[in-house]
Length: 151
Image (cartoon, rainbow, N blue to C red; front, side):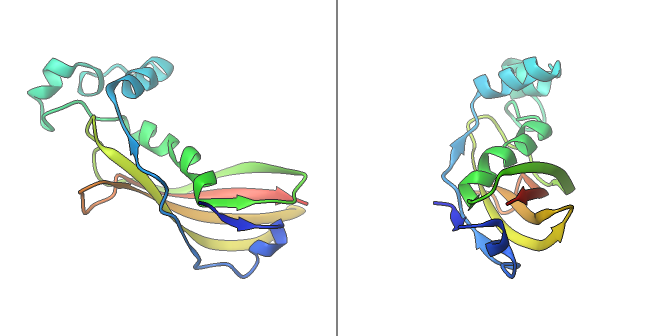
């Protein structure tokens, strides 16, 4: 269940608030192949199951940018802001890929509200999302997402 804020201004003062975790998501080969098709990145380590089995990780791995893109799935599972006219995704800062996601792995998001400020006529929040891999000490990815809400 996401942490719910009734209005964008309710975010003010929430810095340091921990969010999540989300439910686990299994990364299967179909998702990896679909991402490869969307991005035209068909490197063997992602899509050639037989060759990757003999590669450095013993299996295919998710693209780093596939893992990053799933922050967009996890964000609304971590935080829900209500009572706004519209919102925009301003971008990301501090993206780091720290571990590979092997096919069949389960990942989830945990978050923390890093900052909240009035900006550009709205309330802007930065939420750091850490994408964890079940059974691994090192996460797959850490990213700071930037959202702006207009009341």
